[in-house]
Image (cartoon, rainbow, N blue to C red; front, side, top):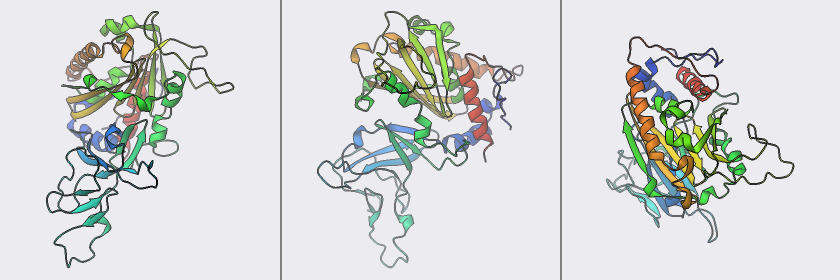
Length: 390
């Protein structure tokens, strides 16, 4: 299969529909897109102190890789935060899962099967019954450490090196992936994001019968908003709705209508350059919608952050997780981010019908709106490049 996308959005046609329907394409995408990507594995609130551990699963339902966040007591002084690592959560003896629940005040990890022990840096420290074993312990007896980075209190991990993702300077680091977000956060006066707290009441998990990429594509364009989301359209000014593309993410900026909640931008430091794509004048922005390759949405509203993680389960089934981190509780029911559940139901309904339509013998590929679907075109080009990389 070939998934070439013309670089010129005014001439390009959309992805070959086999990408959404073919089991072989889905399996290939799992390895070439997701196994090589930085993926969100949750916030880090439960591993904030030395001697804490927290099991995580990298992309449940797709990769299902058991991971373990462990913060040891390295460093000196009472204020030392220790070192946070992401380790394999699988015992190197016979493959037993090691840690099942988050815990604090621990000094090491013990396998419940044969009592093999590890310290919080992943080194095997004890194993009964191995007297006389040659070349034991070896490096392979320690827990493998997974590529891991923290960003404003959130953890990201990668199942393997992203060696095949094309970039002018090589594979993206997490810093490169998320670089466009910080200038916007600063411009909107959102200092202190690290202190926003998760609100479990805003947690959601949705499953529906459609391909994961259809859900992402729907997110990446505002063309459908006036037709599908009357409540959202009433809160934002569609005439000024705009898009900004970056190497590994893109942004949709929604201006708030008069009377709706909006960010209060912080003054730009004297002499500082204007951020690429930033408006010359202060605007009443109601939402910054960031999509991050390949399956993460970071939606910044005046009330805080709604984080959405898209989890492929099969070629025709997807789960989406919603997590909310609140900055101003008084604004959670107002403006562009005030009624997320109805918007989600409207989005799911349409991607279900698109999944059905793709099965038609009479449909092949579509065209892009040069103004409104540049984000979809950008997404498709990244998919095509990843799928072609060996």
